[in-house]
Image (cartoon, rainbow, N blue to C red):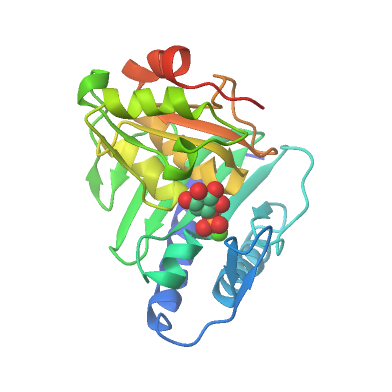
Length: 266
Ligand code: IPD
Ligand code: CA
Ligand code: CA
């Protein structure tokens, strides 16, 4: 059956808007905060409510589509066949809880493992980043220009400061050399936002040792549509079924990053 991608896109847009209104209108209500893998890995009742909202609406409209979501309200998947919506209902939950800003809804739609449409909605700034594979990328209704080549000395790199201390994932000394080499470093606390910032050329690379498919599924489609590259830190292809390290980069500096500055131990 041939899919009607236009109607899938319009439906996804309406769900994103409804979810964002819900989050904004209850931003200062009291929330229940729980922890997951460790005491800094937060989840709130809002994350779960938004994921459930997407799951129920998608199943009703497209019963044969799947939803892979962070909070386990969707389907359990061990294969990529068919249409899979990959959702992080709130990416940047720590920012959501502590700052009430700098978090996003991240939604990637894949067909047989191939990214077709990516949406990242920066809820508080009302910025919807969107790409349709092969048909361009947009920030709200403004088309985004493809990335231009840059040099490392003028790059801004996003990395969490924790990886510049001794750790079991990354060679922190090599990373320290990179931070001295580049023009600047940043950390925003939302993988989705960091990915679209690379896509926009606001930063030039994002380096992180451990993300899940819902963190990168949408961002990958948007970044690649603009000529950027998303791989593991060992330059392998990302899988939407597996957790992995992630390097998101302007293509002109990707090889230098991998060969000279990133040593991933896992
Ligand atoms: C997290 C954020 C954070 C990244 C973590 C993610 P969450 O997602 O994207 O920036 O460093 O690895 O798990 O838990 O806020 O959805
Ligand atoms: Ca996330
Ligand atoms: Ca999340």
